[in-house]
Image (cartoon, rainbow, N blue to C red; front, side, top):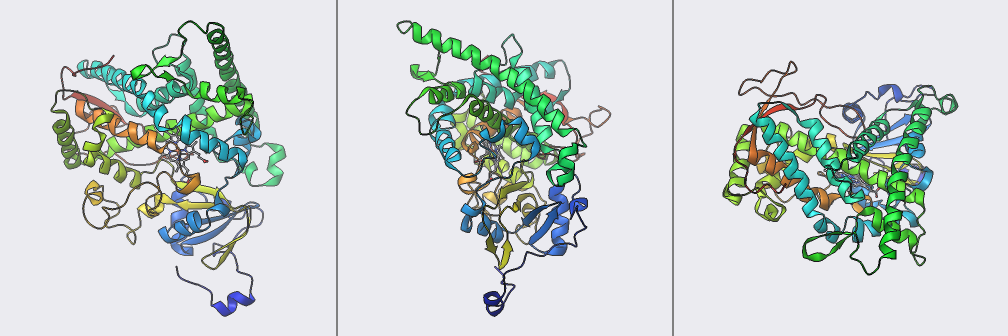
Length: 513
Ligand code: HEM
């Protein structure tokens, strides 16, 4: 790291804040944040340096965009930056301090993190829900096949959101997409609203006077959303409690837990959390609000991120036919065109894996790692005061020619040969952090990395994709689709990806639906 201050100066002076643009009174630099914040920050940093300070109303923000600074912030100063910043919407929707994803680094967070690693998202739970994931993917493929036969177009953006939400709904609440009471659609709509709201910019989060006035009507909308989410979950939890009472009462009868392969009993998230809540010896007593908030955290964190990754990957493959062909050859070789790809094939799909990494490099669903400093820290000779919102712009790092060779080129081979081949996405190569890093890194990574190769592999095994233009017409061969991003908590495509699926396999072998 370049040391910007001489040791002499350092010993005499209190370190100063990192450099940044000139701030306006009251609003500070808020006017400089365009809707695509990660892009606006990258442009500002070109002028003000790799560690930049901004004032967002009354809040301090520090942004870093080099692997060295990312390492310093996320590893060297890990504990100082292991909390997150709440905002008004999150606070209202997620039951005040019952959230995990936005919790400070405290006893509650540590308890849930352990529960996540060992149970909620542990290897056993992921394995037990494999039949459910497979069923959902095969249902999806069957529906796509029907549309392919009838030459109907598919809004892949919407359908992928449905698929990832169905998969997580099943793991969390045993909601089946084939259920008759439309709970899957209700869950999907609520999650969509929550994600949208969390991603919107609320001026009241930064300017004290606006807090009381609620000029944008945020508070009212957040409370309304909270009420509807609460009613939805209350119904599900009450029904589950009744089922659990019946199970206990009929101890001799075979109970109603689902069964995984080998006769293992399958507990979904809700059962795991209710078991903890009923455990009098539990280290932390879980309340009903904790349970509801945790379910919301996981729903929100899992749905968009996974769907967006597939959406961008298919977009890149459409724009890069050479890569698509090579990926299809890999899938055909592994399956010998006799069966659909499955999770058991993952170790034999190095090229698909490299495609996923390359896609996450250029299109990280979460473009910036956001944390809050809980103590004063000195980083690269600069002061980052307690309470500062800390941001590592992983999107900007991926586009920096000082970090990557031909950064804008979609070239999965970079991860298989040459100097970039040793890089992985586990959080210790600081130029590539799609799942974050350290103790606050994403707990859903293993699940995502089981699901993604199979969803992407199956989509390209069964179909080639003819994209539609904005008028709904099939685009001519060789034309490329736009790669614009939409603003929000996550960074999906600006324009939905609509395509006609052309069947490559007909009939599709061994559909398990
Ligand atoms: C492609 C898929 C995904 C991506 C790219 C992704 C990315 C991320 C990132 C960047 C963070 C912040 C990490 C940090 O601060 O260092 C995060 C946090 C989180 N993710 Fe994921 N995620 C994905 C899927 C999932 C799934 C499937 C789940 C759950 C089933 C999940 C649950 C969470 C939770 C609960 C947090 C908050 C953790 C905490 O605050 O301690 N994510 N994710």
